[in-house]
Image (cartoon, rainbow, N blue to C red):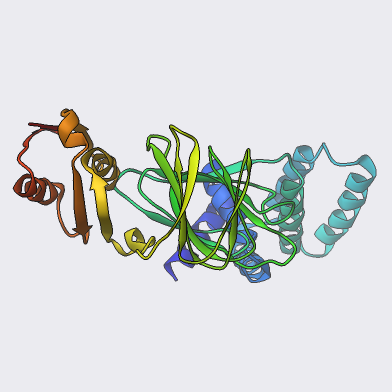
Length: 323
């Protein structure tokens, strides 16, 4: 309900002409979600038009829309003008519905645009794409996709980590593009960890099947497998994986064997801090870590000090680890 309330407010701002560009993108995503959403939008529009629009306002809105549609074919534009002006003579309020429908169609014909969804440091976010695919973004991650998504393609670009539950589509493959490889699927559940600052990148498959395509070939994956890319050597390694790659969605962080330098990167993103390991020996020391995200960053640091002697100092968001 809250989601519909938020979208309803965006619709009202759209009708009033006070909507921002970012808010308009959100509204377009909602309308692309299906006919039910479009029907709900038209219902809101009818309600708003009854209480806010008179014939003069409607005519002014129509004239402004005409100016915005100069890129349309001239014959098409003349036909549209003729039809809608006849509608104005019968009922001004109805025109607003027609105008909005034409506006939406016109927007869909515009040049390709790209939408970017981000999860800031210290936070996670969930996204539902126009094809009903669910995506969870981990802290410090971003996902971008085209305004033509689900029409011409189902391609997304990922920086960071995301867990996908992809809606099956027989004729359109879903592709996750990263800096080092593409993950190509039809409908499945998998996790991709591809932070630019990390020395490795990983794909973990929970359900279905995927193809990991890179410049030298394709790696087929089955459920329960993980492919790890060593960015330094460029080598891919496929291994069995029994852990829970979606644990972070449920506010759990689990590592059987992680170096302190890699753990520092995870903690930095998770707690929105900057952890600096200033000892080569400590940087390569490995730990088994199990967090439930109820712990504060100080709780984690205290636990590390109990396992391995180290000196930790804090300066606001900067944390320094030395021997």
